[in-house]
Image 1: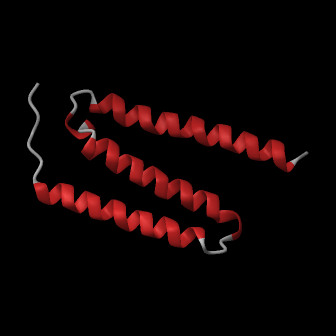
Image 2: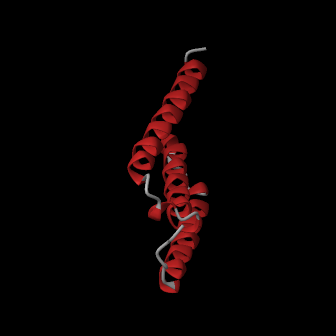
Length: 93
């Protein structure tokens, strides 16, 4: 299996991005965003997990990346559907 070498600068940039996103997540957790707190937290978590999957798990260089690009949004859509159904269930009790 051959993989392209990723420069150290890229890893440092991704790591710094993860640190910044963690800082943003911590600061947003302390803010009162009313109903948007959960949505913002999920967006930040999605971005962080995407960076980790693509760069640290080397999925960016995989040959089946077309399948991966369709699978991740599909799984995310199902997750959003389940969370939405749960919120609707709790809201109308």
